[in-house]
Length: 324
Ligand SMILES: N[C@@H](CCC(=O)N[C@@H](CS)C(=O)NCC(=O)O)C(=O)O
Image 1 (tube, rainbow, N blue to C red):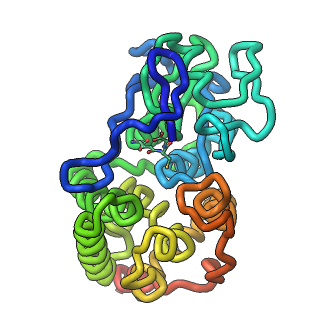
Image 2: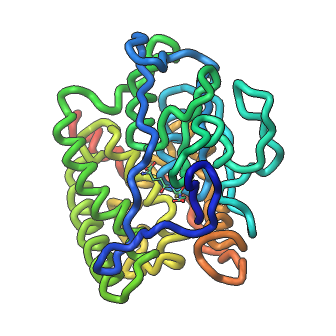
């Protein structure tokens, strides 16, 4: 994908390869914070913020999941963008009026230059937009989900805290392990520039999945008996694994379906109220394998696999064990 250079769109891709041929992501540029108590220039307010996501993107998926988990659907509005052949990065499916303006735009990058006319940045999802100041608040998923978790607490209905004080150290450590061994390793498999870099990512990915499989043999969720941020940062990669990453990104040593604990755990998370509605697996496949997607397959989208994520899971056994 191209990027913005001094406020103008260029189709030239920026360097995303390290010296060993491994695909690396550039850091996100917009890092402002929404705060509950108005301590920042972005106070939590209903109807003020707009989230841009894409069904195919696992990083954006985190924020869409949190919008459901934290009951923010009536507070933060959402638009999904997609890639199109010959387009300029993330594109609106229909003409889009930028919240807080009367500007009609076709591409997500146009918002970045409304916010900053000389912006130099990749244009990524998720992007969180402020309709009041007409600025991009933040385009880093790990920070957006933290804001969603805690900063809208006075506005939204009560929901669980997915980053509780007493588990923060464990959640942070798990996130770091999963980021390297799953979130980034899947991309390393799919987008490496050398066989060696691919092989390294592949080895790391399946070693990490083996470790997670063992951990989930002892407890219901990654950090104990309750769902935490660590689970929801892993989930987008698990739900995409068999239909997208196994085939498209060559992560094909084992499927998630081949791991008893990971597959039951995936179903457990999927069956959390509201989550299935924001897991458009056919849309994920279309975004990756379709004509404008990153995997070149003549635009042909694989039909399988068929996985019923609503079939029963066995994770209730940990609840029973705790009660005994
Ligand atoms: N660190 C970012 C990464 C987001 C990201 O890489 N999004 C991809 C889609 S899966 C994207 O928009 N890529 C466009 C580009 O890099 O130009 C986050 O977690 O929010």
